[in-house]
Length: 413
Image 1 (cartoon, rainbow, N blue to C red):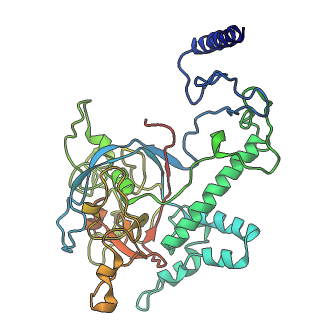
Image 2 (image 1 turned 180 degrees about the vertical axis):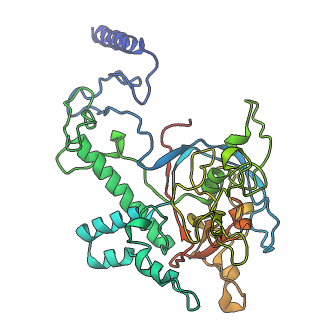
Image 3 (image 1 turned 120 degrees about the vertical axis):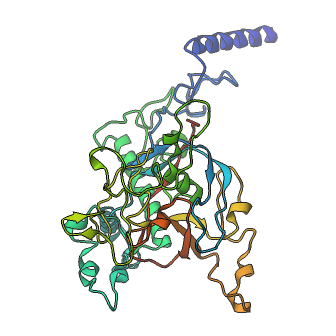
């Protein structure tokens, strides 16, 4: 009798699963009402396993999707500094998201605004960019010290004077603020676009307590904003999708810059002859001559200036260099793995190998981070995605900014 009862339950469960599966196989967005492992209904009561409604979130504010794949990282330029620190090698980079533009002054001022409201005074003070990076004893850059960050005309110019540490703090704050805003929308306070955000299958909708945050399991907490890894940054700058004209996995050429060709001027159409990035053309030449300016920017420029690369990213060469996550080591190209390569602190190639206190004349420590991309003050050599430089993580200059990245969670697209 007990067996018959069990059999009846099993048959019933099978029928339920069969009925559920008529619409196709379960997915993250449509997991069905019953577990395909146990046959138990999701969210039948408070003791049951709860499966929240979920809809894919297409990245976060400001982000562009970067489809990952195989590529060849490394410098194609002549190694003029003779560092031999970025030798070519084949790697695979997973899909991710990256900011369409560099983080701008207006974004940093928004950050400071909320820190001033919500944080201790010392936290706000620590987040202030170093505007004195513009000062030069033998150059009249004094106006930039006062006006570059806060004057409305510079709102959408890249923030500078920001250290690697400050950039990381900004990414942490941005993550919290974006997810806080998602939580408000889930509770109906942001226009009501996400009524089912906290809804449970088999349970009621809108069960979040006011002021609470969605859990990771809800699917409505965005992954962390962060600095891109060096491999992600270089891959995104290459934008090699523009060189693949067929579906046979062959790429017809490498790119010296984030665009086709070996020139820094646009070779096509009505924009022919115009520079494709904001950089220093030569000794003393930052912008060309009046009436026929080349890149038109003596210092930084509007974050949407110049054509985007084939991923849709602006200024992946020139304007400002950009911080990346990686700790600098000259042997990273041979040490790191070939899937999502990344150099962490203090692993392999230890800092003791470069210890200046024992007679080695080196600047390499675990506090030294990589920056890439070239700037308004750099010659064209540094515009090549494979070139790399480094600076201590608590330092800043008028030539380094940053942009954020985010993992592409739950998808291989």
